[in-house]
Image: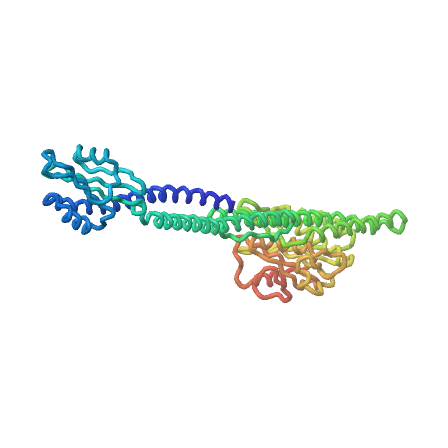
Length: 468
């Protein structure tokens, strides 16, 4: 593109220079010729008055000498018809006799070519006939200054061409460099370098192209992150049936088949954990839930507790559900809320001993819905590490994705997740789902870890809860 612009500019500038320089050079040549013959006419005009007064040779010699150059001016006086005046030739004749006779006969000035230049033949009427004043104009005088003028025109033309080429080259660089960076960025993105971006500079069209490329690259990164999150979320949802399989396998006894079943379940669980850790390489950008999406928290909690209550009875766990006696709408997808509850309840079954009690409470505030999952286990030693993405809860066999799924569910509504100590003596995970998408003042930053319960509506609600 750069050289194409240079070639186009070179061709256009050359045509413009030729179109103006050639006519201008011809005009300069014509002006030099006109100047030379104008000087010759002035010399002839200086001799004509003397011819009208006298035809004496000596006087005419002085007049011719005073006209400028006796070598360039000559006078041809014809003889009179009656023979009283003889023919007089003053100066050197260069024009042909027939040319002088023609001018004398026609009575008007004329120019004729002679060796070394041209002559101007100017007729002058006398009483004895028509005299002819001949002024010699050398070729050097006709072309005087023409060569210099043409050289100046050629220099100016060359300078214009070189200047236009230089300007076109600089403009080409401004266009080519952003285009090259755009190509390099596309190659890098194609090679898997997801951080490749292009500076938005250069002409408007290239800036728009760079902006579109960067937007596309951001979208690709987000899509890949969402794909990883989807793979991780789907893999994590396998943890729920795996938990059931592990619990059922634990009740099979000590037979060889039971041991093989438990080993297969453990291996499958390890593979699922590997898939989760591999898929979760970057923090995704979760899209906000549309205005028309939503579900009933109470219905989802009742449905999931029907599943987990059967496992709780098998392990001798006491459990309680509160706040699900009336519908409670939240702006989250039903499947996402169910996956979050399964993640938290699965953690309770995985990381607390059999017989440990747990509870699920739903509280409907004015601008938010609070879901509390608490247990009577040993608690989480490091809540900060548990909330850290992908770091696990500090317990064996944990990928840390469960709490992250719950956190993303709350954050997409403007809420957050907090970990604290429950009234049952173990861990309490509090999910704050914002109903109007605004953050509640004083709730702290997203993902904050809450070790101490503050006063107010939620604390009163916590103190009123107890297991049957």
